Image (cartoon, rainbow, N blue to C red):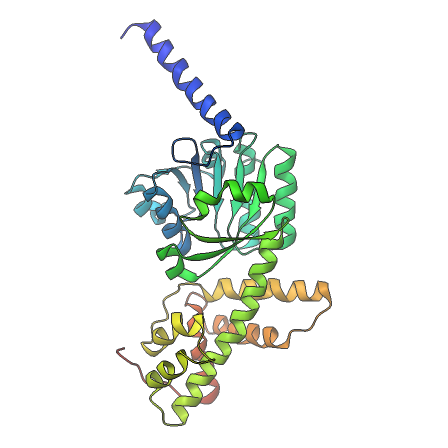
Length: 332
């Protein structure tokens, strides 16, 4: 192939990529697969399903996970693997992250050498979907603003089933115009709810976790009580599901508990982390939430028994140990 043509093709590719980036930043047109490159950091229980929805919607995805093998199912359907969060961001206009702990968020987004923000071009957008500290969300948004970028905190609720079905509740904090710009992406994952300025999405998710914590305690206490009363616990759950005691927790976890299915849709370890953040925020606010504190102690008990990698429905094990009972397994 003639050398001048090779030079022309190289220049064309560089110009096309540059124009794509400029087009993404400057256009008021909706985000589409043809004008927006996506990055994804964290392909665990939740991230893998969420990322897959975007790939199937036609978007180009570059992904990173600390354990590369966990990204393989996404590579099999068209994603490209990067060697670091920085490498993801350098090839993306919008970078999503959903990792384990606030320390992980800080590392993958803000590390000056390997973090996503350092690799993001001006006008790029970070979307952190991890449940994390509200103050860290504000810090990331401020750091992104210095680079003429944007950051949205957008934690989710709905568990592994919500991720698989694309029905997550998404709690977004940050610039409302950016959240609206991202709506075509969020719609592939669930329903986005704009909650206010940076950090407000995280505050909503923490309140969500406080609600779930006490609900889960009530669910497993009711199941132990029904068992000791001689009831068929499966019939009991069906009976209350359409009444005032019905809940998303009962719907998602009641039958899993009866089947002794404690596989994690949401890890105990991560829930303990979330409840710890809630308690820390309560201390800052000067408020007492005794139900939250009790639930956190019960979940810490699971960790103490080496059960941190089970799902949150494993809370039944704590109540069984406290009362020296064991619910009979069911084949429902």
